[in-house]
Structures are given as C-alpha cells and as structure tokens.
Image 1 (cartoon, one colour):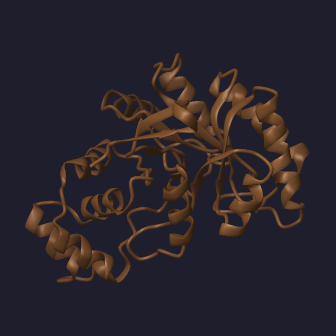
Image 2 (image 1 turned 45 degrees about the horizontal axis):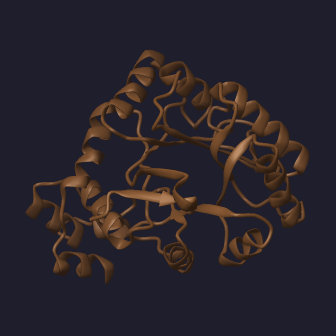
Amino acid sequence: MIQTLTLANGELTFHRLGFGAMRITGRGIWGPPPDRAAALQLLRHVVDAGVDFIDTADSYGPNVSEELIADALYPYPESLIVATKGGNVRPGPSQWVADCSPEHLRAACEGSLRRLRLERIDLYQLHRVDHKVPFEEQIGALADLRDEGKIAHVGLSNVSSEHLAQARAITEIVSVQNPFNLSDRESEPLLEVCERDGLAFIPYFPLDGGDLLEPGGKLQRIAAEHGATPAQIALAWLLRRSPAIAPIPGTSSAAHFDENLGALNIALSDEEFEALSAA
C-alpha cells in the first residue's frame, strides 16, 4: 500500500494517515480543553509517532486548536504540514455559520497565520461554501492570498463536484475535504476526480460505520478476525479504497490515537475489502 501522498508536483508530501485537531478543544468544539497539558502532550505524541499532517481550523474553539498546535509544536519540524481552514464563524457551542466574504477570509487567514506563528500556511482550505456570497468571490479571495504568499496551496471542504470544477477554473486546488466513510459515500464522484487528477481526498468523520457496527455485522466480524477494533478496520478500508485518500481521525486521547495508527498495520484481504465495499 502506498503510504504517502505527493501533491502539487512534489511541493507537498505527507503520510496518508493524518490527525484532525478538532477534538482537542472543549465540549461542543468550544473553548479550551478540560486538560490543556494533556492536549499539548497529545499533539507532541502525534508528531513523535510520525504523523506529518495535522488538520485544524480557526473555528475550532474558536482559535483554541490553532493556539494549542503552536504552543505544543512550534518551532515546527521541517516535515510537518499544518493545514487549516477559514469560512466558519461560531456564535456559540456546537453552532456554525458560514462567512466566506473576501473580507472575512482575509481576516481569518491573517488570524491563523498569527496563531500558528507562520509566515505562510502550507494548505489553506475553504471550510464550507457560503451561499450568501458568489462562489467565485470566495475562491478568488483564496487565490489572492496565494498570490500574496500568505498560503502555499488551496483546498476545499464540504463541496460538490460542480464547486470543485468551478474552483479549479479560478486557481489550482490540491485537496478536497468532505465526509466519507463506510456508511457515507456520497462524495465518491469527488473522490474519483481527486484520484484521477492527483488531488488529495481528505475524509472527515472517517470512522462512522453505520449499520455495519451492528453486533455480528461484517465490520465486527472482520475486526475480530484481525484482532482489531472496528475503527481500525474502517480506517484500513479507507486507506485501501483509494491512494488519494488521507484520513484525519481526531481524538483527545493518546490511547485512541495509538489505536487509530494501528490501522496502518492491517491488510484487508480482497474478500474482506469487497464485503465491506458492498455493504
């Protein structure tokens, strides 16, 4: 199995199993974590374990996730890619509102640069589409930030195939981050485009097994045969599903992170892969 992804003519290379830093914040993805020292220790453990792609957003906390990443890891290892996102604002816990006006995206990017202590963000992603703002203006704002050297590469999140095509007509797009897992494969057309054209497909909510998690179901049975957890099998399926896929499972627990990392050592048989794919 190919373990790394290389994008943008070799400008970005990272291991295919990354870390999503949403859950190192407080309850409802709001405020600081209940144990700040443990969150910092987890981030250092993630990097020490060989993960070189961390995904975050200014809206996680808000601001908290980015600040923790910088406090734990700055100065960053040369190989580490910290990807972040802009375009969501947070009125309160568990509340998300789109604001992808060019003015807000510029301010959001500047804020992320300060919090992450970076001069340039390797991968900056539009967090969601704002239907109040013409889409070409949203992408145009990111293209401007790229031209100014504030971001190196542009990615999209929560988009359709049509959005991806429209964005690529404006500027280079290197990644798509949409929900995708064993039970939610609505974004398969986007995945196919990413695989065909050399873009990264970064699935969030990668561990949802849906009905497959029922006792005695295929996922449980295959996990038992491998001496693994259902979550590990779900990640192993994603990693085999396409070489373009780079899952970013997130957790606030070092033990859970280590469990997720164990998916790299699981080789599903053709029969197991097909059984899960057909579910």
